[in-house]
Length: 464
Image 1 (cartoon, helix red, strand yellow):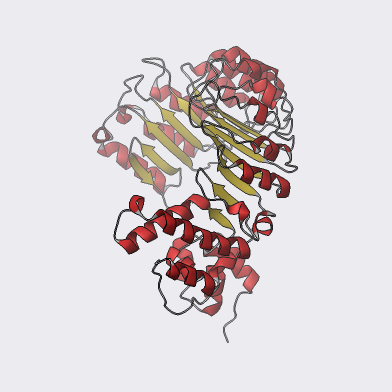
Image 2 (cartoon, rainbow, N blue to C red; image 1 turned 90 degrees about the horizontal axis):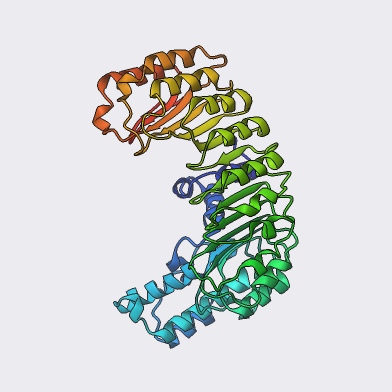
């Protein structure tokens, strides 16, 4: 007699499947069907099915307003009760597309009254039957907080993504009932609604805050809102803003991840920050003055595991990293001399991955660079990316001594298969047959896990 996995075990397994795999599981048997449906329908999967779940009184209202819907048999499940992640604007767009299709016109010409009626009935159903964990709500006229049941629907919200200019009424409503958001992502538009600062202020358990400034507007001051961030924060991502970093971040002493895509020119305030728990530091687009960053790393480098400096890097900065960041696992930086690289490789003994923008014309020999990394990198190191970009004109890969490099890697103890990516300004055709044969040989030997030169992949399916 066949034995079946318990429902809890199946549920844990299915949680990690992609949607396409879950849809296959729907067809296996009734138990797999039920488990798969519950997971799939955490987000709305089919708008026609959503409409089919409307209560009869709502369907009658739609029909009274000449909105034609299918009258097929009721759905197998009340799919609505499974939903816990909702995008208000996706629902609004689906309504316009549905009505446009029914009326055989483009969505922008759909009767506005019909949109209003259908929107009201759908959100009335949703607010009465679901308990949300994640909500996305950008600009629009939809007001979900006025529907009966909205308080219970929003009470357990843990993730909220929004724009700064949605109605003040909604922000005030949310700030009264949601004090335990864990993730808050805000796109700042041309205006900031009253109540947004209150929503930030009342949070007691906020862990992740993500801010994007969509429009350049010197009069839009975000400082007042952002200085209200609670000290429970562990992740802070700032994108597109010119901000007084020391003012905003200085109290956030529990930060573990800081990603800055700011418009600050010199990041002067960063040198004064003390973030003893920081593990991930990334700079995108613009980079701080090295002297400020060096001061920052001297204070905060001890626990850093990931540093992304983009195309920033010099000897003093790399020496600071080698001295004050002993637990570093991943580094992205520009390097145009070998000695600073050796300092990092020799002193950061936890390093597993490095992504190097390779300086300027003639500053590095590809063969010597690869040899240095193979010989000096710590034993856990296994992932290398070299980006020669448009700065220099490297020799073709056939001149890099790849066989010698891979042999040296094979003699490492332990030998962890290497993932190698090299980006150059060479044409793919210059990755010649000999190079391909060398790569294929060392893949089969288990020395290489993955190799990519420009856009050409040489990938091995598993490790020996």
